[in-house]
Length: 165
Image (tube, rainbow, N blue to C red; front, top):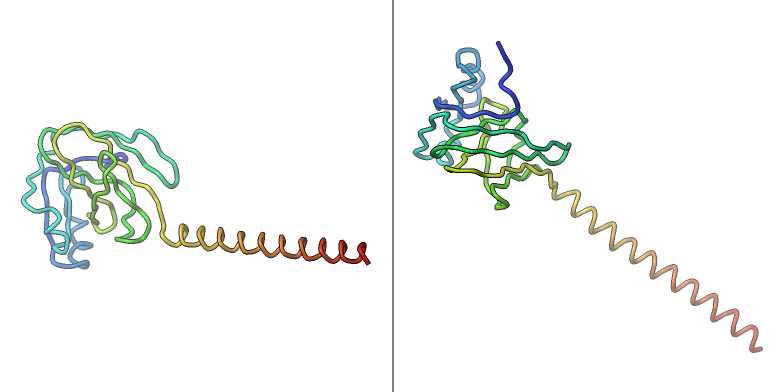
């Protein structure tokens, strides 16, 4: 079997009832055309009837940002050869700069609906904990600087008072 690359479109959606059925289905499906989706994501997919008609290419890669270009005829479902971590785990998806949802497909990969036409798709790692920690670090640094400034000022005042005596 040949590898499918960084991303690809599919033309057949197979819905399963739960995670175990999703894993079991991995032994019998054709990953180049089929995608297995847990029914919990059926609302996201909606009435999508993909045809695998289009192209999608990885344009740039870094550990915290992936950029793709797509060109499709009709709305398609793209599968990305990247691990799906779940909602609110740091990975954000953007379509033409606008935040969009993505889902888990084939038990552990990412899936994204891509509208008709040419689009830029970006996955970016923006963990909330990191940015919260960054703010805490900034506030802590400011407090330390203020404390240091106060100590230096106090010492300068003491020295000046001793000189005036």
